[in-house]
Length: 315
Image 1 (spheres, rainbow, N blue to C red):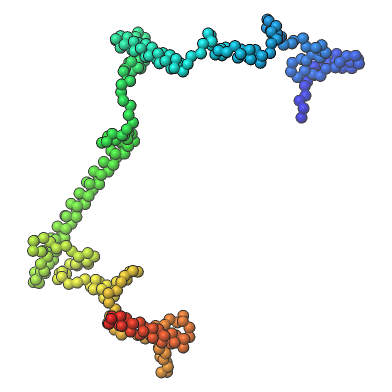
Image 2: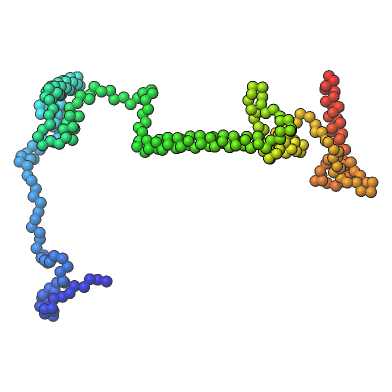
């Protein structure tokens, strides 16, 4: 929506004007003047005195200068003299030597003068001035790692962590020592109870070795109840575990064929006198007749292999 400018109440001078008068719109910013007169400001052209008097072409002037011979004079230099590389190098070394001599003389004069704090100068400013005057140019700044010296800067946080860790270790050592004392006291109390409830009539088995040291108790052995005596017999659970056999590993190698304490039962039951010699061929092989044929072929292969191995051993 366009902006609306409020008109002045007395606008009779701008309303119903004759055709000769130009009715200008309301002024938005600065008042504009509608003048058809040309602008009088023009850029002044600076005139160079004597410019254009010599109308000789530049290319002809260069040819004439080249025909005269001699080194070309450069307009950038004051005298136009051209120095060789050797002269430039010699001049640069002389300038460096002069600068070094001036710096040394200044340093000597500064070192001779004793540094004193100036009136109105703060300690920080005086300290900075002293640091600046110190002869630090002869100090070797090497970043090589020195053996035996750690280049790691220990921070405040790391120091706090180390203190905490030290306290934790000491606390843990105290707790372990307390647990050991409690364990020893419990063992002494248990020994007293065992001595009080032991059977005086039965012969006690020797629990000490030749050197007089106490035998170590077997691992996972059941604790004796009140009134029981350890006669050195094997644990019933250990015997049962050995009897049932332990679980075989995946890559275990047997040293001998298995021995059966009792005859294993038949896998296939015989009904009405009908039987098939299928051996241990699985059910997935197919029908009973097919399994019987596979069992016969398997038995033939086993016998042939045994004969071949016996012939090899004989030779």
